[in-house]
Amino acid sequence: MFALTVLSIFAGKVLAGKGADLTGEVRLSSGRIAKNAVVYFEGSEKAKPMKDAMVDQRDRTFIPHVSVVTVGTKVRFPNNDVVFHNVFTEYHSERFDLGMYPKGTTKIQTFDRPGLAILLCNIHPYMSAFVMCVDTPYYAVADKNGQFHIANVASGEYNVHVWQESGETFTGRVTVNANKSFQFKTQR
Image: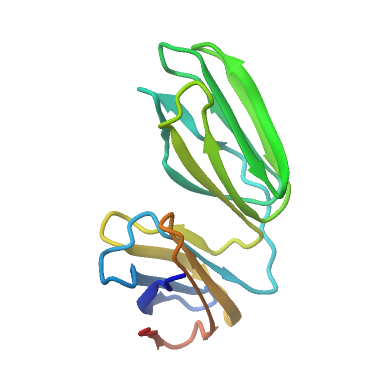
């Protein structure tokens, strides 16, 4: 398995009494930009369930292609396409299958444990998407340039995890001090 390269994570704006705003860039081991990479910092603080999470089905595509939700979040899966769809995955060795449903219908699934769900549609085998469920409030999905931003990260020790749909991953350890900037680099 190849390892992602986290080129850098910088602490940006640091406000008194607030956490650090972290920005960084992620690349694949080949040097190519790691767009849609999921970056998250696991520490002692646990996340609350999100109030509004959705993966839409439109133009025979799941939108967004990669998303992050927190433990306990109920994700809505509306069908806004002109055809029937089905959403299924194997999530923590338990398969969920929302069945076939028409345009204008919404199904809901609760993500109750951290982990990765690979979404598929049994009607349209070319459709796929990824939902990463995390138990931390500190996460981001890298943009098309491999850039990410995580706001208000509290001071503390964190395990940094990065995942990208290519199968490449990265895990590291970092100390965030909200009172001063730092730079974290890895080169593999």
